[in-house]
Image (cartoon, rainbow, N blue to C red; front, side, top):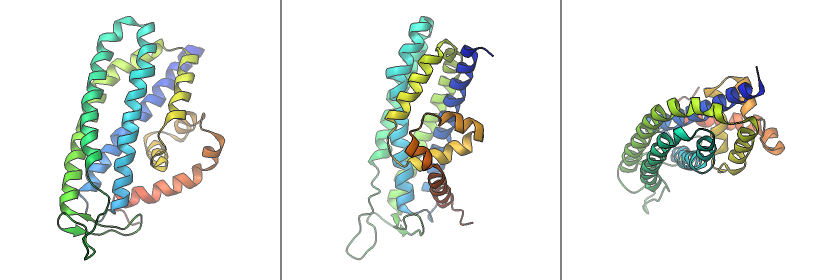
Amino acid sequence: MTMQAESHAQALTETRLAHETHRLATGLLVDAAGRTTVPRQALARLRDFIVANLRHHHETEDAWLWPLVVAAAPDTKGALDELSEEHDRLDSALDRLAAVDLTGTEEPGGEPTGGESVSGEGTGGESVSGDRRHALREAAVAVRDSVRDHLTHEEPVLFPALRHITPTQWEEFAQRVIASTPPVAGHLMIGFLDEAGTPAEVESMLVHMPAPAKAALPALRGQAAAELRALRGDGS
């Protein structure tokens, strides 16, 4: 396999895993928001992770990746412009999701405001009112559906286009993405990547992580496993 072919394969792997994390995370938030045993803090961390990482992902595509592709394959510009317009619409859905109040504000009597309260234990055991949980689920459904539709449109365009990116360009792009990734619930990123890819694929994707972050991987994996169990209502 030539260096260009190897680079294309790596770019495909990293992009596919990133997309699968978005599918997994947004689907899980919809499910978890409807499950009354899931603690408020776990819901808030997953919501914040989704908002921060989806925005970062499509901003890096618009600002860094699309120009590389268009420079090498000008005929892709129209399709990439349409994908950027979808990013703008996704931002509106993310704004709505981010606006859901999950701060845990309580009435003097100790119950959260906004309706029927439910409680959870373990990973952040504060309760979430029924009204807030309903608002969260509705906003999460809109984001999940927007992400799924967008990726259905994006992947047939982007995956073939990645062959136009040189090995040096992809490595520089990947390093910039890692360096600018928001430090929001990073353990969830590791957990979702482990579910989306094989150990070898995940290892190849994390090769550019800073040494301190690599050293923390076992702890992050343990934290992710516990939190994903809580979000899925799996006490085992």
